[in-house]
Picture 1 (cartoon, rainbow, N blue to C red):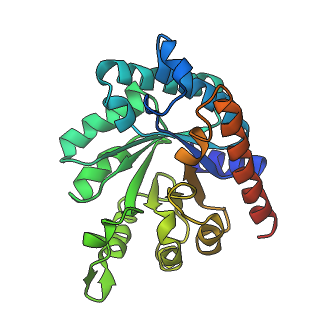
Picture 2 (cartoon, rainbow, N blue to C red):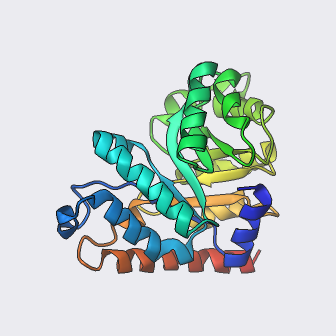
Picture 3 (tube, rainbow, N blue to C red):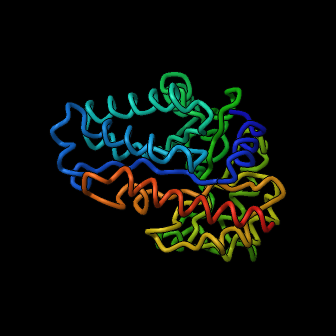
Length: 272
């Protein structure tokens, strides 16, 4: 998906919601466990219910890899279902890959060619040659970890080097490896107050913002500091939407939570 296509979807639907697909067989409704592929069935119903209110889906690959071959099959089926039925939705593989160049090239082929995702999250710790292979595919995106929402981000990311936090050094360097057409950055919603400095550094890049909802991030704060003239945000919610209910009404409750967040986004866009 191109940058213009993504922006068009956001402007048309008046939402920049990304729904995280993180299925856990200990949390999904028990009646689904009787299905041949419970994870896929759960995902399919969540996708159908929330698609009107979002512009992106983000399956976290760990929640599929944990189940071995059957989980990876569920992931592949989920991606194929989204691509077949909701082709205008941006699809991010939350895989956090990052390795030496030839290994990253194989990761890129796996997700962009085999699975046909639009984007993949990438860890930049090993430097430019671990990220650049993901930037060689037309209309595909590397979503580079910038400032994450976990407590441990303070261990390294917020260390000051020459008077500037490490995450700012990383984002400044990484922004030169790609363009605003093929690179985004992950910035956690729980660090929303730091978005002001980040926007000065990367004013035109899209930011993928997890942590709104169950993790306590504020949508209003994220938008206050993170919106740009082209919106420039994909705000992700996973647990707060997909686990809104564990009953037979789980899909309806998920739709309701997604609709609430989409309405907030619509109001914010109208007033900006």
